[in-house]
Image 1 (tube, rainbow, N blue to C red):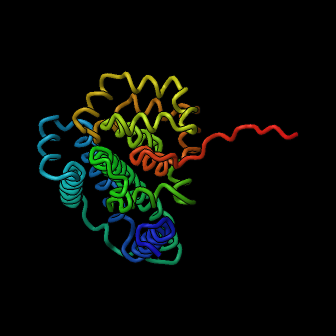
Image 2 (spheres, rainbow, N blue to C red):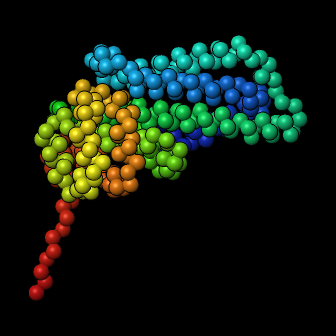
Image 3 (cartoon, rainbow, N blue to C red):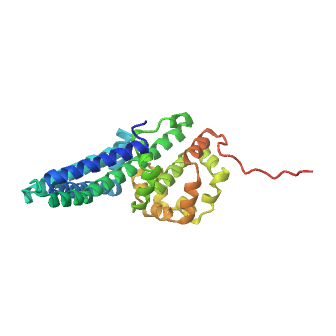
Length: 287
């Protein structure tokens, strides 16, 4: 079983929840509340770095390392998490005392689920976004080098993103994802093929791309100046957070077309120039 597969990640999240409940019973929920608030502050800081980091900083980090922008957001989030933890610890004391009595322990274990779920949600959203950026850069590198074989081994962050976006875990997170990151990540991966004109033409000629190409929201993305600017400079962290991309992802036509499209096969065949997707069968005359 792969460590980045959906069943493994689901078991890891359940195990983390169980540990937090036990911790809440033994130590009380004060520390878990601090953990949840600090995690929220860390995610907000990472989101700010993704969305509002200056273009020259993104260019410099991307030139230093392909995944530097993601790790920069992680570092920013960790620092915010640490400072928030220290600040809350200086304000509140005595919350680590163990609850006494069976009723108090049961109540502490139950209420421990609230900050636990918040921390799990924040971590899952961070993985989805950072993994989406990693996949876009991965597609760009394969498209510019015109080597579909480079897509056999996706980056670790992209593998984790796939794990939290498929199966039962993916269905649950889709319902609590306010940014529709599953669809925006898929749109970004397709748009990244525009770095290679031949690969892009191969993609839009595929029969199963027709529903998406007929969508007005998707065609608007191809003409949007902010989207074009982000693609031109490989600012995938900003591309993933653009309101235009989120707006297109909420369209039922775009969402249904993306869910019906075998994304990885479509991208590989576009780069390789081979018709991996089956063409629409023609009618045959029986005499």
